[in-house]
Length: 499
Image (cartoon, rainbow, N blue to C red; front, side, top):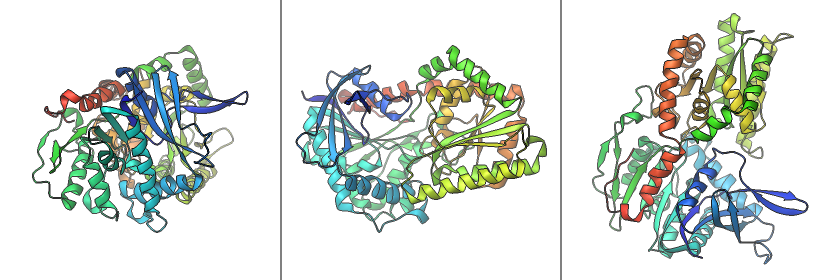
């Protein structure tokens, strides 16, 4: 049956597991990833579909299930699965998306690798996604495409189905023209995005950067701007803007720019935090700490996340303040994104070397300053760590949003704890009551962690109260409502309330 809403995202919306020799589809364990957030839309429409890829040895195998019907707590929906070979996955995702696009999006020109890119394969995979979405969508349906590895889908889809309403949401940073235009395929990418009715971003700066790229490549005339909501103006963030672009006029259409930051499921996190077993685990962690204070850092192993810079800051802290060597512990969770990629191998090795050196220098028989965890932690355990931590330390060199800091805040119903956050994370424009820091500055990083450890209880609670207000206000439900309004057919002729 044709669908009123089609979501196009590279990942399948469930976990495939083997039970008694049979493949079973189970709901994702993590409640705060983008997948559960997107699936929350399915209850709002009569018929919905999801388009994703699945690795297959032989894409031509007639026994491969290209379309499966799913029924879970989010409702009934269709999943259209594109069979890709291991070679296609490697080319489309690991090489083009991660080695060429990822470093440019995050401002790391020196890590950009153009040579191994097979653009024909990338274009072909995007065409497969577009064709699958076109086949699933009802007349006039809304198709919502997600993230940079599907940049070409909107343009192809518009040619196949001009009747559709197409929205694209960008989950990473979007760089300004002088960085983005390093990509030799920039014109094709921008033309595809300009085929959308709506292009969405987390924060005003990313929308402004998108406009700068468009104007460097195409004549679109004046781009109107509106004032930014005060909740999205942060004096301490390098990403803060006072105005945000509203829409771009092309010869073919009006492209609306939607700005709304992805949040977390505050209700679910609160319910996990209030479970008796969570309290028991938290007490167990605190007992194991033996009166020491806990600094918690959680992220992926990626050169954009600033893990090495953070560990070096902690090493300087222990050098400067011998009293912290046995009274403060850093739990550094750095989960490998993809161990098969050289860039991630290098940063993982660097993190392990620095953590080992710190422990070698400052550990005693009873106390180890750094605990490094490179495996994924179950979310229920992570909430217990959030509850036990005195400080959450999130200092990426660049980050589209960052939900870890928001999860920490949502879990702290006791209204205590300190957030130290990089001013280059998208979340910094919302969380101005955090201690914002510049991870490129040793002095600034040192000052921020020292301030967090010496902050008075009154100041901690005042800041946390404001942080919780913002995170609760701009949770996943608020993001969903904003995006549904942009996708709504009756809303396309109206005014845009960006940011």
